[in-house]
Length: 102
Image (cartoon, rainbow, N blue to C red; front, side, top):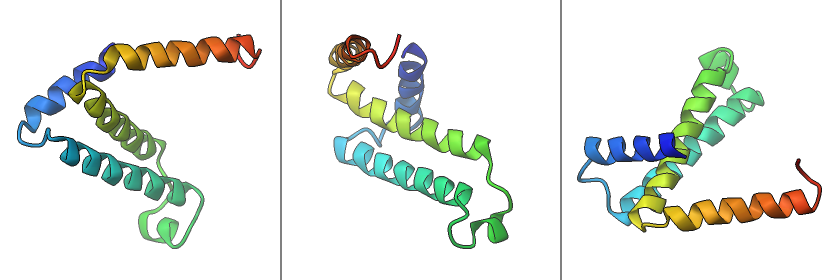
């Protein structure tokens, strides 16, 4: 989580005029669209392979990283870091109780 928070800090500094909530949500939607495009490329949807060649795990993970950072920007904007971590811990605990994970 700390690496993600550092990336958010850097992105806020890189784009100081782009830190309003509606801008972050718009950026998140854009990044999710780019993730979907990469998934379509992997699934050979349309003419992606003909146009762009073989899909790239690096491109896919880069887009996923950007989407995660966009989500984390929203968490930081609303100062909900502790609540997010608590929510993650609660979900993991429940999954352990249900024997879904170790």
